[in-house]
Length: 391
Image (cartoon, rainbow, N blue to C red):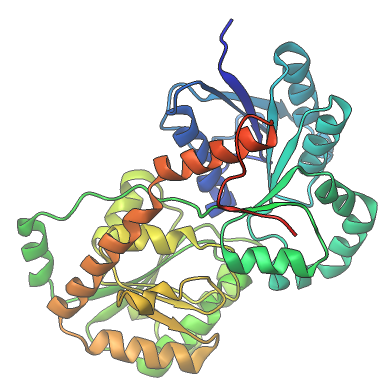
């Protein structure tokens, strides 16, 4: 029997289509499992035969409750069964609950209360104003039925930026809040030969890589692209389609006669995702809201300059001269794209190199250390970390 500190992480699923939250959960559990004296278990659920994003760390134990019943999955019953079984067998010291609103998230908190296990809750941006206004009626009902009580019973709420922390406070939650950013795996630097090969290509690429969902602002981007109609450039869109939003985006592209310069490449991950970043000259995330925006950090780690909006907490793009941080809307995107596309290749590379150096502060192992300090404090095993703010 190990004497390691047992931490169980709870998340709704591990599907590629679930976007940045799923990737962040996998990366943080991998990073935590690489630290000494810590045992990490990740509990989720899925339909039978559904694939999951892989872990990069062999010591993360995964428990996946499976069912063929959509009703059972919708109620979080396979997850409840597996987490309850694990708690009764292993008695973890703490539950780290990722996300809100779903029965899975409720069961994680409810089982924590039942077995007197402290729960750390990480909303992953799901309390941001735009997120609350999306399907607002359902969320108001959920708040009154269970979500407010679940949040109020959390030992700590984890925010990924000071802005998210402030927005949580505005909702009246008085628990300690730990501000811990998401991390990024620092990409390998391009070799001189690769850079030379890319510079010989006559076509340049702007990349959007995220969920194809209204919150990501992709319609604003394609409208800005239509206004500019830049010669010698292609807009490449990658990511899972949610709720049929891709149809709306491609309809605008076709209506405006931009099909030759806009390409949807589908869902990408692993090596294919790396190639997308390596062949991009510019990355754009025209989002309405982000609690962090991990794809921004990923793009910077590959040396790609970034345009994103003030809906994402990335003012440092301008501070460190590695991108543009603009107001939400079509016109600000047009202005930033015009500036970025007018730069020379070497100017964009210099901007990208500044971004690569800046983003090293988001190393996952350092973030894992911060997270462990929060766990130890919650369990009465250490002093309050500097990242924790009390009301």
